[in-house]
Image (cartoon, rainbow, N blue to C red; front, side, top):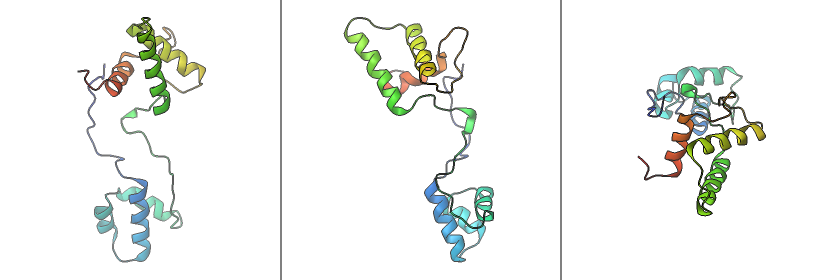
Length: 141
């Protein structure tokens, strides 16, 4: 169970804006690769690949998912889910952990979202639930 995941590297921590500024700086020919990479905190290899692509500034590039973790739901969908769970609690129909995991699985399937939930048990994983709880209940430890 990976409930206490801590990022071990700073890979893919650069922003599109920093990459755009780095490419603009390179096009001005006022600094070398090493200076630009250090100044804008972008990876050398990615900057090189972008510059090799005919010096075009690529915006909105798809960034990878370091660590292999991808969000299943958007922030809005997670907020809707949280609202639903809290509403069920208000009307005295509180959901158990298993109920929540089953509802989350159904929500992902009905919205045709890519997920790695268990198709046999039709439930989201404990790790997902713990991450979700930590996001919406800041006093939970």
